[in-house]
Image 1 (cartoon, rainbow, N blue to C red):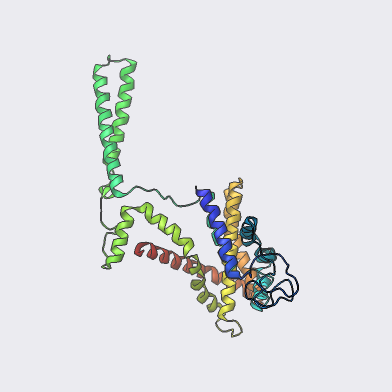
Image 2 (cartoon, rainbow, N blue to C red):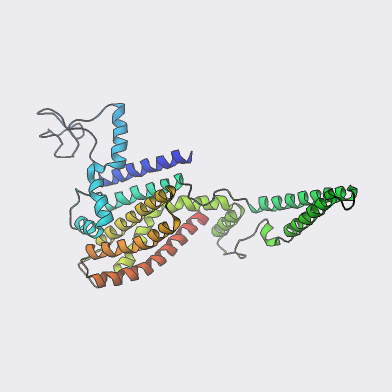
Amino acid sequence: MGEFDAAGDIVTGGLVARAIDGGHGAGHDGGGPGALCLNCGTVLVGPHCHRCGQPAHVHRTIGAIWHEILHGVVHFEGRLWNTLPLLVFRPGELTRRYIHGERAHFVSPMAMFLFAVFTMFAVLQIGGISPPAEIGTQAQFRQGMELAIKQSETALAEARQARSAAPPESDKARKLDARIGELERSLAGLRNVPATAMRPQGSMFGFKTGWNRLDHGIEKAEKNPGLALYKLQTNSYKFSWALIPLSIPFIWLLFAWKRQYRGYDHAVFVTYSLAFVSLLFIAITIAGGLGVGSDWLGLAAMLVPPVHIFFQMKGAYRLRWWSALLRTLVLLWFITIIAVLFALLLLGLGLLG
């Protein structure tokens, strides 16, 4: 069922992004002279309404539903294919052109980001890359340890009884001696498991914060870590948009003395950059599934984002290469801070939620 859920995420991401990007209705050109727009009632003077933008001819067939889904996921009125090459190979030019008003040719940054993030998590799910969702609770772990000790004690008693009945110096006796030694070592290891690993309750940090809601969340996470990891994974893409407002102040710091650059410019830069990183990890995941070596994939994951940031910053803000390089190095340090803040946000949402 994971593959179906992942496919649903891809479709959802595409349709949400399509809605944000502002399509004006689906359909083919049509409508005779003097026809009225079926959306706003304006007299049509062409294949599209000049007031609301809806096509004159609209679909009313089952096949049109599938067309709209596919259109919303992969087409974006053709703008996706205008946007992707620039996003990958000339991100600075894409960012600059969009900021300066060239919007009709490109998918908006937020729509591109949503589509890429939904698709990334769907591909990760299909590829089986996710934190374990089934982790035993403390009580289950303790019960399992007790059962293992009891079974080992029973097996050791049976082996000793069989050894006492076996002929001395026989092959059976030697095998039973080896078996008894193995069971004794295993039982000693089980009994030496630290008691703290089997504690039934209490804070994982060994203290109370005094905030009842947070303490309750910590207690629940300790009792059911599988659920806690699942909530963390779910929140990571539900709140992935929070990376944008977290990042904008740090980008502003890089250009605080340059009045020609505004917060909107930084938002476009950040959002397109995050969209590219999501698409990169989609490509890495697919390449890994096709058998590309982990060394090459790790190298790509480490080197490609900084190089992309350098060229995007250089082109978007029209910087000299040394200025773009310096800001890129500083931004890489900022990214570490942003990642920590985002992780703390997710942890807090998981514990308080």
